[in-house]
Image (cartoon, rainbow, N blue to C red; front, side):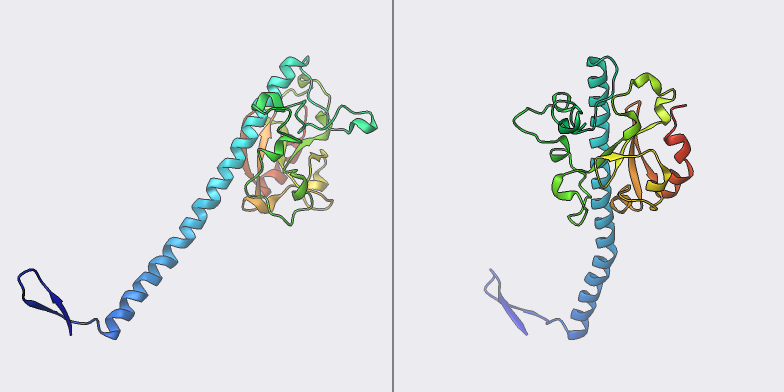
Length: 213
């Protein structure tokens, strides 16, 4: 028996938990943990999905601000050493429109990373999490006749993607980083809206997503 001294000066008797009662309590706690942990994990992953989607929306606004300042052209994605103007993630393209300073960045992905990216990805160390369509580099925005349906940026394993379905269905590499978001990807469209597509939806709509109409 457990004895406790009360303010009245009298001893009060408490019964010990029996082994069975203790096991029942432990079992209840284990059941509750088993029920709650998957929900907590799912909520955490959903938070990452939303953060990634928000990154792309901010990029979309930055793309439009850049185009407005540069005669409605999309930025480049080629190294200056080969005659290009640089890569779309570099500060001189989108950085000023994302509130970044020249001394802060090497590329904007460094400050707006996909939170679901994993260190085993081929270009993780270089902080390349999103890719821009190669067929839109240094092109006028007016070539796209259906901006709400035209893919501009996607979760990817490098910084540029080819408008070729072979890369999206896994025949060629690198490709979309489907593993980050439950076998799907966040897509940014030319009109600056972003949304989530399952891999199957991307593949079934690939001709529309990559068409300038």
